[in-house]
Length: 349
Image (cartoon, rainbow, N blue to C red; front, top):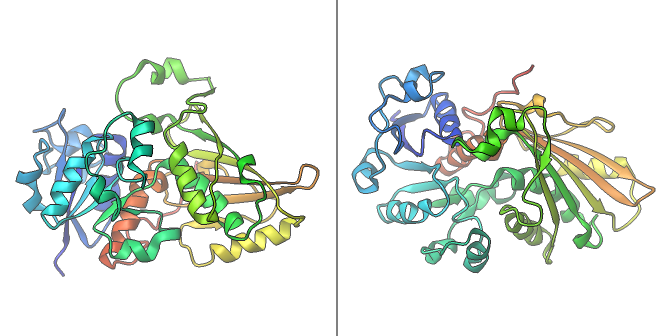
C-alpha cells in the first residue's frame, strides 16, 4: 500500500516537533517535507535530538510552490497570519490542509481581526474551513479540504462543557467561569523573558485576563452547541510544568440534578469516543495521567449549596491540544482508523 505523503510546515516549534514524533508512528504515512526558516538546511534530528529516525530528513525553507508537489496533506504549524496565504495556495493546488494556527478557527473575520489585530486576507476560505474537534464535527471533517485545528484551551473547555450544554443543564450561560492552567510549552519555543526557567520555576500566575485570544473561539463553539449566545469568563494561568492543561469550569445549573444524573449524561455522550474518558464519580483528573497522550480526562461534581456544576478536564496541550488532534483529524479525513499513531496512553510518572 502506497503511503500518504505529508508535510509539516513549521517543524522546529513545539507543535511541529510533536507532529513529527507522532507521524513517525503512523504506518500509512511518510513525512516527506519539514520546514523551518531558522533551521533550514539542518537535519531534523539535529534540531530534535530525540527524533533520531529523521536523520536523513533536512529542514527546507518554506517555499509553498516548490514544496507542494512533494506531499499530499500539509500540516501548518505556523504563526498566526502566516497560515492564511499558505493554506490558500495549497488548497488551490488541490492539497488538503490542517492548520494549527488560529487563522481559520473564527467564522466571523471581523472577530478575528478584533482579537488578533491583523487583517484576514482569505475571508472566502472561512466558510469552508471545518473546526477540527472530532467529538463534534466528525462527519464534516471527513470531506474537508481545510481543517482549523482547535486551540489547546478551547479543546479542554469545549469537551468539558459540551454534554452539559447539549442536555440543557446550564441556566444563565453568562454565569459560566472557565479557569485554566497550562504548562509553559503552550507559549511556544521562542525565547521570551517571561518564560525563562528562573522566571517561571516555583511560580504560578494568571495572564491574559479578559483579553486572551482563545476567548472568542470558546464562545463561538459553546454558542453553536447551545444554539444561543454564550459569553464566558475565561481565566488562563501559567504553571511551572512542561506540558498539560487543567481546566476547571463552574456552570450554574438550570435545575436540581444529582451527580449520578450528570455522570450518566456525560458517560452516554462520550461512549465510543476513543479519546475522552469520564472518570468515576468522586475522582478528579490529573495532568500527569494524560501526559504525552491524545486523551482528555473529565471529572464532575455538583455543588448543591451553590447550584453549580463543577467540571474538571485535563489534556496534554501539545497532543490533544495540538499535534495529536491534528493527526486525529488527518485519520478521519483519509479514512484511516481514528486512533492510528495516537492510541497510546499517558506517560507516568
